[in-house]
Every structure is written in C-alpha cells, then in structure tokens.
Length: 231
Image 1 (cartoon, rainbow, N blue to C red):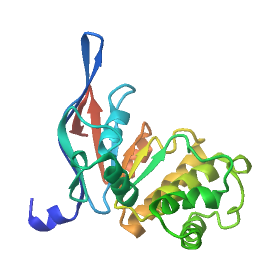
Image 2: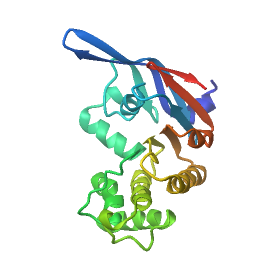
Image 3: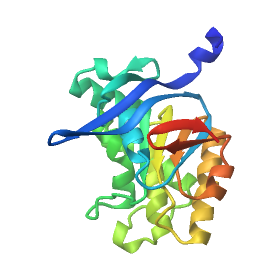
Image 4: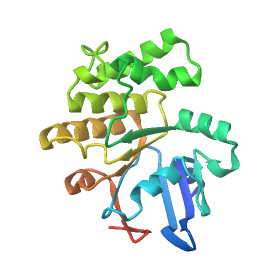
C-alpha cells in the first residue's frame, strides 16, 4: 500500500473480533476482521441474518468496542479516545443510516436534518441553512416544515440520509437503508445514495440483503460466521 493510498483511507479496521459472554459461555460474533475503505469508495457487506453485520457496523462506528483489534477513522484510533472525544469525532467524521429512519417525530424534516450540526455547536441559523441545502438536494425542498408523520416512507428515509450527510462526513455507515421500503422507493433511494456518493466523495459502507443494491457498489464483501471475505 503506497503512502498516497494510505492518506486517502477513511477507515482502517484491523483484526477485529467481538465476543459476548452469556453466563459461563462465550459467543464469538466477529473473528479477525480486517477492512479498509478509501475516500469516496462505495462498498457493500452482505451476509445472512445473524452473521454479525450490525455488530460490525457498531464497532466501525465507535458505538461499541471490539474484544480484540482496532478501528481508525480518518487516522484516529477510536478506542484511544475518551467517550466524549469519541462522540465528537463520530459527529464530525461519520454519518449513520438505519433501516428504520429514527427521526424525532415532534420535529420537522429540517429540524431533524439539522440536529447533528446543532449538537456539534453550529449556530441555529447556519445549521438551518446547511440542512436546507441538503434537503433540497435530496428532493425535499417543499417538505422542510413537515414532521415525519406527514411524510412517506421514502421521504422519511431521505431525511435520514440528509441527516447523515449534513456534517459532510468522510464515511457513512448504512445498515439496510432501504430494507423497509417498497421496491420502487428502494430503487429511488439507492440511486440517490449512489449519486451523492459519486458527487460528494463520501465513502459508503452499506450492509444490505439486496443483491441488486450490492451490485451497484464498487466492491462487495461477504460476512459469514463472523469472518469477512471478498465476494
């Protein structure tokens, strides 16, 4: 690996293992997983239910600590940070998209999308401007003041994508981001994510059961019995 390629990496995971203890028993969910993502790369992770995909995303995003191994995002080893600094680093460099949008029902689309910027400390006016620009980009310019209950499933997921991208992260981790949508809406959201990936240069790691979605990515990796391999 050349120095130039190393400098463009946004994610370096080395030797990741995760073991859970249940009474006197130990369950190994991930074993010796190594993964690297370059800036602007779009990678899919496929695997059967229970193969450890969501656990892997939690480790890569610094939401959980590995039993062994390390995760570095934009050159920073996540485990070496205090909880407060890890949250700050995650807010700055990582966006998350889930199968269920997890929008706050009492807030508008604009308020939901702007939330990460407000948490970061941006002024309300600046956060609103940035979130508005991104919501317009994902086709929701006319729905800014609508609360989640007034939006369709596809629209709610577009708000969630805008929220993930609003801080201009280097990396977006997506866990079945279209798994709760009908086929037509899923295809639309997938196309939008691809377009944003290509135009904004943000790396996407996408866990999906959808083989067609995986085929739209530059690489596909398979997680089987806790081990990651190229498909």
